[in-house]
Image 1 (cartoon, rainbow, N blue to C red):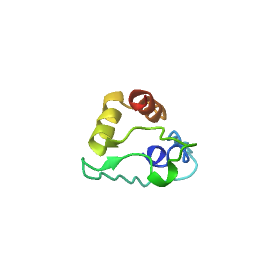
Image 2 (cartoon, helix red, strand yellow; image 1 turned 120 degrees about the vertical axis):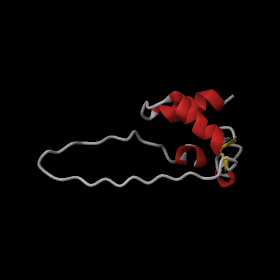
Image 3 (cartoon, rainbow, N blue to C red; image 1 turned 135 degrees about the horizontal axis):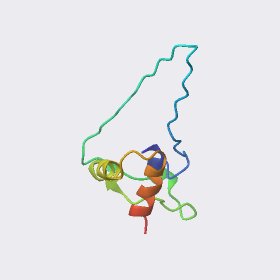
Length: 87
């Protein structure tokens, strides 16, 4: 979602976990779920004539459904989102 909001200025990375049997690891997961009707689109301040929007505006519900339809597939989520919603 950050990649969409920043018009690809911030590139998302694939989540990877390195297992180390010698040391203990602590992970904290943070999830946020705004209202379904919240618009998700590149920030207006980041869209210019020389930097047009990479992603179409969508609601959080549309974004969420696209992610769920694709299933777990690493970073390619955002690439599929762009291909599915960009003219």
